[in-house]
Image (tube, rainbow, N blue to C red; front, side):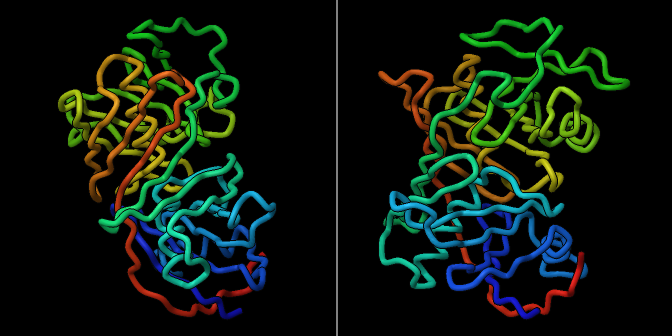
Length: 293
């Protein structure tokens, strides 16, 4: 099957974008894995699909598959590429669009400077809704929140993580230096930890000062990536609640820089998180996708 695609990237987080506004390709999980494979397919961290609006209050449906072929709830860097794609491809003339995801509705806006701002919605803190199983754990109070000890084989003391959802689950750890953080050593164990029934994205955050962070993320189903938009949002929200950050933070990732704002004001914990960053096309083409079960 011949499938047209566009390769895009946002702060180094790279995507394959598929347009299914006119026809469905009916790809299997194995075919999504093949597309994401950097040796045999096109290569990407995630595959993003544009589909027609499923209801009248949104402009499009936004579907995300990880490199392992599984469909997931949200992807912030992908959302920025999504709105850039639909505008550049002539699928809309609007500079602001609303899209439906498995996690809810996102508002995406092209800025005059070429960057894209995404209203990521409100964070979710209730452990069972992340989902996260805190049964039997003794949390460490910090700021106006808490961190949870997470047992890992051979690691003492147990790492303490802040747990929340940005439409997808995140565990955030503070480290003194992201360059030497044990991302490869701890990332897989935390991602698949039994206390996270849907697995989890793992953020290793260095607090440079109250308005500047450095971050590396081990993503669920993709491994470490050059950037993670929801991970940057989760790290800043956690840092605000734990007393590390102000409400606007520049987050430096391996692939670029994102601006994250959580202006709580009167809304408090229900305030929406705003993410602003780049979204760039790389190339377009047509690929022959093999028949895979």
